[in-house]
Length: 101
View 1 (cartoon, rainbow, N blue to C red):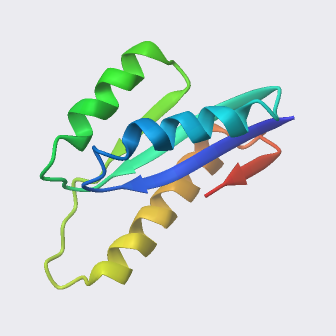
View 2 (view 1 turned 45 degrees about the vertical axis):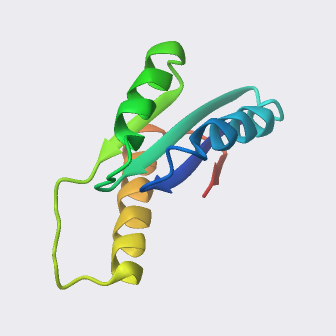
């Protein structure tokens, strides 16, 4: 069985090691697994830390949001991130059995 595990991340650099550790634990339940992070404008070095993890683990995929609408509220940004991850998974990993978000 194949699975994509997805997460929207923003200002989570202090939690990222634990997040990735937990994702790797879950990935043990599947034959093949990809980790997809949707990054959105952090101020704490989250993106740099993600890039470091990506160098060490080829299962990590990073989507960087380049579109910012100041009229969007927090809920809209979360929905936009979710939709971006769904589209990425459908396009690149359409043959996977599961998606965890």
